[in-house]
Length: 542
Image (tube, rainbow, N blue to C red; front, side, top):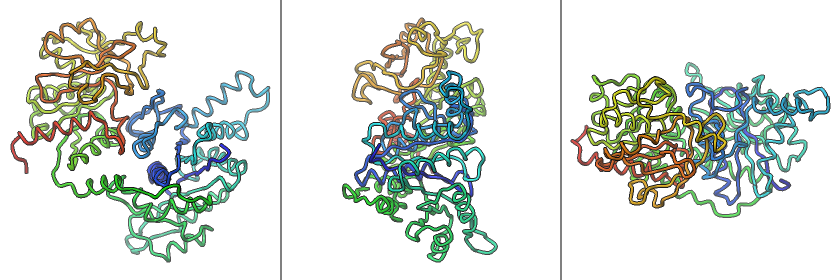
C-alpha cells in the first residue's frame, strides 16, 4: 500500500455519464503503460448489493467468482482490463452501514456514539485500502457512483478527502467527470454547470486535478481554458470526451487526449513500456467497418432496457468481431411471443439466444423460441433459465410430459423437472440453496462443449436456485438429449446439448461473465461461428 497511487473518479451535473467506462478506460491505458491496476465501485444506494434489484433499476446483476452480486460496472472493469473483480470491488452504502451496525452490536466501538464521521467514513476507507493489501498494485481507481451534490454521496466524498489527508497528495488524484450541455437555440456549449459542480466539490474539501467533460459537440480551446481558469485546473488537464460510436472507442479517444500521460505526470512517473493498443484498435476498427451482419435474436423479458443483458450483448459483439462480422442484435420480448407469431418474429435470424432470468413471466415465450430453434435447426444458445426452458421444451414436446415444469413456476407440476434440491446443496453449505459464484464443471469427453472449450474441466459463474432433477436424467438421455456438463462437486446438470442439431447448447451457468476483449468466451465464439454457417445455408436476406 505504501507505493500505491489512488485515483478517485466522481461525477457531476448529471448521472449516467459513464464513470465506470471512464475508470475502465483509464485502467486499460495505465495497464498499457506497464502498470498494475485494481478498480473499485463505491455505490451510495442503501441496497446491500445488486442481488435484489430489478434489472430495470440498474441493468444486469453482475456475478463475481467469489459469489458477489454487483453493479454492471464490474463487467466493464473485467472486460476491459481482463482482471477478476471480487466482493470488495463493489461496495454499497447499505453494506457499509450494515457492517458498522453489526460491529456496534458486537461492542466493537466500546459503547462510543456511532456516527457517520468517523465510523462510516472509516469503514469506507478500509474498503478502499483493502484493494491494495498485497502492495503489488500500482494504481487503485475508485469510482464513486452518483452525482456530486447528492445527499447519499456525502460520506463517500468525505472518505475520499480523508484518504488524501492520510496518504498525501503525492499518492492521491481526483478526476471529475461532468456534462457540458449544448443549448440548441443559442448554438452554444455551456460550461457553467461544470463550474458549479466543481464548486460543490471544493466546498467538500476536494480540489479536482483533472476534468473530463462529456459532450455531444467538440469543445474549443476557449471553453477548455475557461473551465480550467474557473475550476483551478490546468488547461492540459481539461479533457474532452465527446460521444463515441462504441464503448471500445473511449480508451482510444482518452489516449488521444493524453489522459494516461497527464496521470503519470501528476505522480512523477514514467511509462514502464511502450503503449501498444494494436488489438484494441483492431476491435474498434472491426466494430466500425464490418459490413457483413450476423443476425442474433435475444429472447428475454427485460429487453426494454438493453443493459439488463449488457454482458451477453458485449460477449456476442466481441465474438462477432473476431469473425469480422457486424452484430445485428434483435431484442425480443419473451412474453409477447406465442405459437401464433413465433415464426414471424424469429424467421430470418442466424442464431437464437434465450436469456437468463427469474420468475414465470415470459417463460412460455422463451419455450416457443426454443422449440422454433430446435425444429428449424437454427443455432440455439440457452443461458440460465434459457437452458431450463430448453430442457422443459424437450420434456413436454419430445418426451410427452405435458405437465413438466419447474417448481419455480408450478409447485403442483406432475413432473418437477427442476427443483430446489435443498438437501444436496445444504450439505455443501450453500446458504438459501442459491448456487452463486464460480463452480467447476466436468465436461463429457468428445461432447460439443468439450470440443469448444478444448478441455474437460471448466470454471464458470452461477446464479440460480433451481436444478435439474436427476431422477429424470436417464429418460432424457434415451430420447437424445446429452448432459455434457456436470457440476464437479454437486453432480447437477450444468450443460445440455442435442447432437442431432447443428448447434444446440444450454448452460446453467453464465459464460458472459467470463468474456473479455483479450479473451472472447469460446462458447460465444462457437455460437457465432455456427450462426455464420447457418446464414450461408439460409435464403439470402436483404
